[in-house]
Each structure stands twice: as structure tokens, then as C-alpha cells.
Figure 1 (spheres, rainbow, N blue to C red):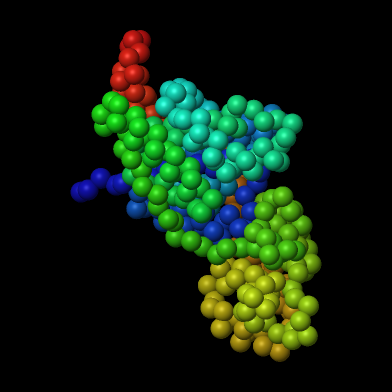
Figure 2: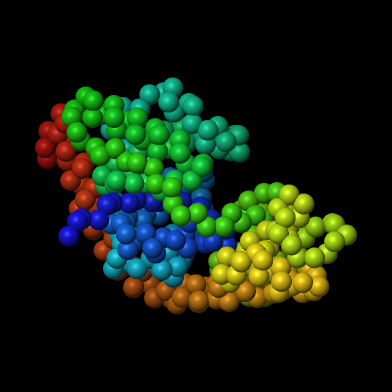
Length: 332
């Protein structure tokens, strides 16, 4: 039997997961763990490039871990761990800092974006984080790294660093290929259909842990369109608000756009918006309830992240030992 290819992905616990995250890539991750040997980590080391409230960061890490499991990431079938629990990330990150060029880092668009938003905290970690991200990836010798449009630059610089290191020391790192994951719906903000759903606009964003009444409130207040034709019709250019709601309804019910248009023919927006809200409530209910159950079982979550760290550390340390030997460090 052929060995599974290795896939790795991390997410920052800088906020809560929302409907856009779930209907985008996250819903397809359980399929990935059947196809690949998957490592999923919570990137808490990256999160502190922006100031965090410590107790809140700890709570978000555990909530995100519980969300992952509730969304179908079975800890028996994949490796779930917290980045800071595996010291090799920071250790390899420093080595790769020394093989990453200043010019490469200064061209990273995310550094420019974040420094514009956090002018009072332009720290060294914010500048050098791509080297740590390269370490996150290369430690596990993955075949693939899932990437969206906004992350392609990170995989490119990771590949450049790995190729530079391999050019000096031989085949130390596997060069990972970007993997374009199965794309779910591109979900836009409920109160601003021109923008992606984002935690920075909470009124237009449905959080996975929102209570049903809060979900319904957000959908009832969702922006439709100011056209005189009040019909439910998928036309993204003419009717972006209604089209976004149709996209959401289609994603959670499995119905086609045509079926939805027929279902709400002659009913207008007043009937459509609550129907979408109710469908989302029922989709998120089992995730929210399972997350709450897991958060109440601290011993189980601790077991998951400790077992995940042990497995991740075993793999990561093999790569780190090889790197240390290549650069000339004396073995401990």
C-alpha cells in the first residue's frame, strides 16, 4: 500500500472562526484527512506579532481546537497540535532567518499591510515571520501546503529558502508544492456584499459559536438590494446582496441556484432572509453544541493537544537534527 502524501496547514488563533471560514476550505478538510497524512496546527507563535491579551489567547486556542474537532477533524486520523508546544518551530525558524534575505522579507505584502494597521508595534517578528512560516512547513517535509490567493507568496518564499539551503547542503528539505484546495463558497459580508465576510465587521459576520437568535438577527438585517425587482434571483453584478444569500443557502442546503429561485418565486426578500438564517442555524447547531461539549471536557482537549505535540515533535526533531548537523552545530 502506498504511503499517503503529507499535507500541512496552520491557522492563527487571532479570532473566532466564522461562516465564511467553514463554507470555504474548512468544510473540505475532513475529506483531506482521508486522502493525506495531515498536520493541522494552531499558530500561536505567529499570533503574538500583534499584541494579545494572554487569557483571551489561551481561550481562543482551545476554542479553535474544539472547533476543528467539531467540524470533523478526527484527532485519530490527523495530527492536531499547538505550534508553541513544539520548540523545533522556533529553533528552525532562527536557522532559516540566517538563510533568508532582507530584500525577500521587505517585499512581503503582509508585512506592509500589518505595519500599516499596527504603526505603534512594528516589531522584528512581524518582519521575519516568513522564515518562521517556512520552518513550520519544512519541519514536516510535506508534499503539499494548501494555499489561497493571499498565501501564495508565503509558499514561494518557503520554496526559495528551502532551495537555497539545499543548494548549500544537499537534499535536506523536500520542496513543497502549493495545493489549491477544493474551494467552497466565497462568502461575503451580510451588511457589505462587496467585502468578504470578516471578523473585523462583526455585524456582517456569522461566528460559528453565535447563538441561533444572534444568527437570525444578522440574517434578518442582511443587505439585499435597492432594486425595484424584489425577486430572489442569482445575479452577482446586479444583485450582490441577494446573490450572496443565495450562495449561502445553496452551500448549506445543497440546492442549486435554479431550485432556490423556484422555491422563493413570488415570495420576496421578507421570506427569503429568515429561511437562509434558519438553514444556517441548523448547519451550525451541531458544530456549536459539540464545541461547547468539548470545551467542558478540558481533560480530553489536553489529551488531544499533548498527543498531537508528541507526534509532531517526533517528526520535527528528525528534520531539526539533520539541519543542525548540516550547519555545523555540535550534537548534544
